Image (cartoon, rainbow, N blue to C red; front, side, top):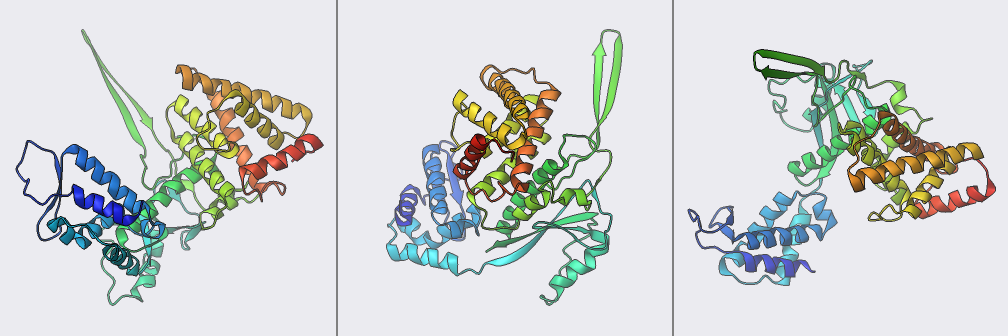
Length: 410
């Protein structure tokens, strides 16, 4: 559907009568100077939100540099006369709207957030991990300010009275700062997940967080019974910070260096995008306190790598395909491959029981085995000369088929 049709759909839904104070109808109201615009009744509000989202999705260059809220504000401002006079927009109105949005220059914003649970061995220089830069604030404050002070007449008191210990930076390209924050926060979420994947095991010893940090805390319980009172307290959370500039975290032999490198690339191929998505699912799995949910998320990471379509249901033939592929990638002999294939099938049997019958009997040993298989598959794909240039699932299976019949180890 063209933007003109959607805009006119929104204009048709809009009303300009005064509904303030009305309790007999649901309405959404938008103020932007002048008279307010209303969308009345729940049905119309839902239709408006749907139309707005469809309009926003039409142009990727606009969607990637504006927030939906900013787009909404600019759309209502541009077509305000059409709303008030209830007259349909014309092609030239829509064209001028799009041109106006694209005329706004794209700027590079440096977005900083506090990062918790870390320490740097060498704090006097920033640490670069892919597209992320980590600063020890006390050592780097003047350096950060000097970068921007040369480009502005006077540097604002941006830190106020805050004194963060460490900061993480992501550079975001956007047309306004709210979008820069939105983009950066998506990458900060990804940072947490990648780091969990790299650390490699679910543990309470470490917790690195930008947006989702919980920290060390006490869990208390208070127990009352007839003639008896009691309480219980246990500690929960990280007990020590992780040294973020340890060479292990960027090891090339494990593919960690490649994973961080993917965060700086704008032209990842389809399979590389799958690898990064699988890494994020592993990170989510390791952060999930529910054994069943963590197990499913680890399985999803493997399915992202080995299934052709996102909506594929894991039927026996697909499970066999995944099991055989894992065995071919990780096994170096016939016996190893047979054991791996059997192990993966057993684990997928547990996956099926969780999904279809709500089974909660998941052992830590089974979860850790599945998690390590998922991590090992990614490592092997990223570090094997025979697999690290794969650009699609189809390409992966073509290569695996050749090795299946040759009997060689990958």
